[in-house]
Amino acid sequence: MSDIQVWTLVFVVITFGIYIYIAYASRVSTTSGFYVAGGGIPAPANGAAIAADWMSAASFISMAGIVAFAGNGYAGSVYLMGWTGGYVLLALLLAPYLRKFGKYTIPDFVGDRYSETARLVAVVAAIVVSFVYVAGQMAGVGLVFQRFLGVGTTAGVVIGMVIVFFYAVLGGMKGITWTQVAQYSVLIVAYLIPVVAISVQITGNPVPQIGFGEILGELDGLQEDLGFAAYTEAFTQTTMLNMVLITAALMFGTAGLPHVIVRFYTAKSVRAARYSALWALFFIALLYTSAPAVGAFSKLNFIDQIAGTPIGETPGWFNTWADVGLIEVTDVDGDGVIDYGPETGELVINNDIIVLATPEIAGLPAPVVGLVAAGALAAALSTASGLLLVISSSVANDVYYKRVNPQATEARQLLVGRIAMGAAILVAGYLGINPPGFVAQVVALAFGLACASFFPILVLGIFWKKTTAAGATAGLAAGLGTTVAYMLWTIDIYGNSDGLFGIPETGFGTIGMLINFVVTIVVSQFTTKPSPVMQELVEEIRYPGKSRLVAAHAEGHLDEVIHEGRPGEPPQEPRSH
Image 1 (cartoon, helix red, strand yellow):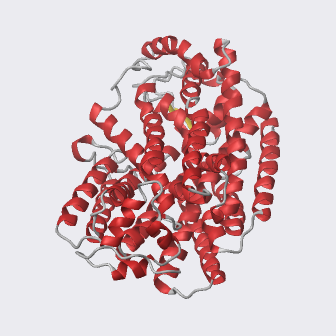
Image 2 (image 1 turned 90 degrees about the horizontal axis):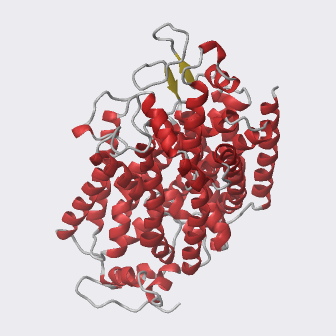
Image 3 (image 1 turned 180 degrees about the vertical axis):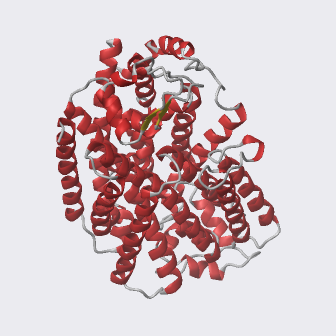
């Protein structure tokens, strides 16, 4: 084994051991502990867990590669703007109100706010979004094992499945939460150490967020010399319309992601949910403000070391990534030199390798390379576990308990939840071995689906008390259905169409969201309005201090109050309990 493989194995064994120990120490025996960690997670820890849950393999592995190599730096910035802006929307528009409403999941909110039919449609949407998202995470796990431990992609995904199965099934949300706190610590240290070291190496400035600005002029010139657009030039790879659509799909999709929203249910109170959002934004910013620097530094080093280099004289790191098929070189003109440019067709780089390869490109020591690999696994596994819990809770709580067997004991509910999670892990593993694109592309599809399905009905459910069950159901089905159909029509491995007006599949979620809004609002104008009691409850969750119906809802007595209320009648007081 090489030094890099040895250090990677050391860090992987240590970190996986920590995750398993935490899961064992946090094992649960109640549905509340399994689904929302008993609602007792302190705000700073919850913020770190939210950050780990949200900053997936796409953030850690792919984002800097997209910024640097998928186009120029400007075109790749849609991911930075969309994902960070979306978190602000989530924190301001949804999280505190959903926490006050209570329950366990988004389908729970949809079912109580609208109807049981809407709940089932929401379950389907949550499962579709989560499976698409988790495919990207498992693909990232396979990538890391393939490159750094010499293990095949399939074997790497299987190893990841086993680890996630152990701590997610055993500890539920409580085990996942504290494991994610540890995983955030690993991933942020693994991300920041190399970028700080490279910033010092290239610019002499230890603050990468400042240092990378000093090289942008040089990078612009190098790219133009090779025939690329300048790194900072606008609208060279995509139109202004598509920039807006993709950014919006990522932004509104972030605010509708079920595995992120459920994290706010683990906070101790509405106040703690708000502080959790603040802590999470701080933890997220540490990585997201560093990613543009990673992209720029990597691009500069890559051009310097590879462009114009004889094929037989490429550096060792380049050859290693080429050996696993993630860099492809074709000597089109037969001159024996790598001609790197937009039209040459001699060099194909997988976007997913950039962060993982950055320490090697910069010549950093083997322990740093191994730490980065462990950080990438932490990012992928933390998000995968949160997504799998969404799938498990949707099946066990929203389908089995709410629809099939309302008399089920807690032990039976936990058993069904764990079986559902085990089945979800098997499906996730298959999708990780056969992903429909590179990691960030797959994840971007999930954001588009969340944007088109959940965001409209959550916002309207909180801020428009007259949104009807029929309207929400129709809007959710229309938004999700049209977006799935468009993606199947346009995504490379399923269809060959350029789509409508050149809109890519990653941007169509915005169109699906608008369809959802329109259908929900129009249908709500012509269908039965929610009961007066439900309308009053919707108002209560928006105003601090009001909790009469919220308390009845939390204790399970609101149904009785709703059944007493009729359209046109004044709201009834909750029964004593």
